[in-house]
Length: 324
Image (cartoon, rainbow, N blue to C red):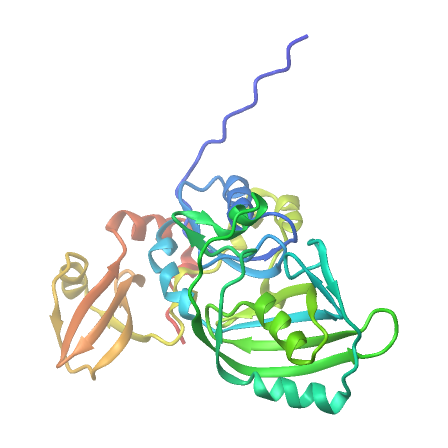
């Protein structure tokens, strides 16, 4: 007996931001595609990736929100991680082969002193087991094929490095940290470098992103929670597009100026210079796009289309709220 053909998903315009608690295992793109399928969305993207072996906060953008996803790439991140001391692996985490074991002979005082040395600007070489791309292909795919490619050292900033828990003796010594850092920081590399500085090697046994920019884990949904919802609840779980525009100064235009702004024309007014502006229309109250102000001119940046604005107004009235 032949199986019944699988029903084709009817895609639709969906606009907004979903805060996902990405699980261990799937890539960021795999998690995105699953959420996109559940929402039946036409267009989707994410605001930067998490490695397959990392979990936690992953903002997903749908429809017109994808126009502003790049703005979030520069956001600071916060992670919680556990460094298993004494064992070096091929991947820098628990999935890899053991390359070396070394005794752990450091004191708590030495640990605190070492952590202090990793505060502020530091330089890192991105690990092979990361989502950083080379020629359009993630480094972790090269690593799985047994290849190593050249990576260039980069500067990142560790804003805070909190020691949450530690055990320096026994069969499984470890250090648990909370790391608040700049974009582009590789916690896997940080963990290995800290363990090396302690003279004992180490690897990550846990990595979870607990915050990115203004978003934290308490605001996120899992794929299982999203799957258990009905369609209306899934749509209601989307946040308005302008949640990506925190830090932008709101400017509201009347109907005539809004129309001209949407056509890409600069507008003049008594605005102060500002590098980041979120522009709204007054009637109807809707996000129009981003801009910057220079010498009294409102200069368009990324703009929504009239069709996108209409779809947002029809499907999600809350998406038009201005940034506080």
